[in-house]
Amino acid sequence: MKKKNIFFWFFLFILLTTFYFDFNKTRLAETFKIKKIEIQGVENADINLLNLRLEKFKYNNFFLINRRQIASSIIDIDFINKVLIKKIYPDKVQIKIKEHKIIGIITNNNNKYILSEEGIIIKKYDKKFENLPVIYGKEVQIFFPQFYEILKETNFDLNKIEFLKYFDTNRWDIFLKSGRLIKLPGNEYETKQSISKFMSISKDEKFDKFKIFDFRVKNQLIIK
Image (cartoon, rainbow, N blue to C red; front, side):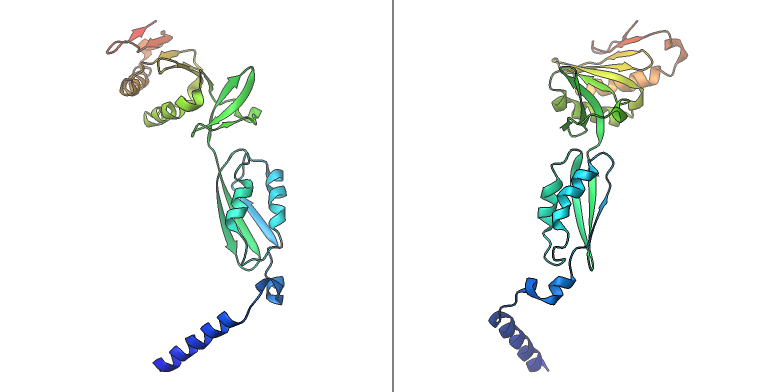
């Protein structure tokens, strides 16, 4: 039995290495062509531009389709962060798009841009983002992602923020929609402690009349 198996595999090897087989010229290749490209996960990216760039991959051979080439043709489109491609037999390609999470608006020379949590600037601003906080300061796309992580760690409600301002001393001010101003220190640990303390005392009615909470001096809180 073992000898028969060995003979079979040896014969198959000789057959495959001796004859040239052009898969693209067979009827089988004509049968298995990509007929449908399905796109999922798009909220902000330009769907028309996506379809336009993917059109050239239609009717390519299902088995020989180049996934990397498909991904590289669309990864530079605004809002797209990651691309996952799946082939579904016999004639369908499914493309799952993961978009950048938009967390704020930045301004430059009276122009508005949007900022992702990774610090990616996207110039395609839309009014649907107008409820996001506006972020001021030099090179905020570099410094804000780290501060954004602090806000998430402390469970700070981002919907309450009107705008944020970054200072060259590596510290932030938070302006709330309620009219309150939080002045934070430059040290990361102290910043976390200050935010947590503000969240705690802001629930106390006796602090309702105060609008400025200044945590810049270590171990002190100045309220006005």
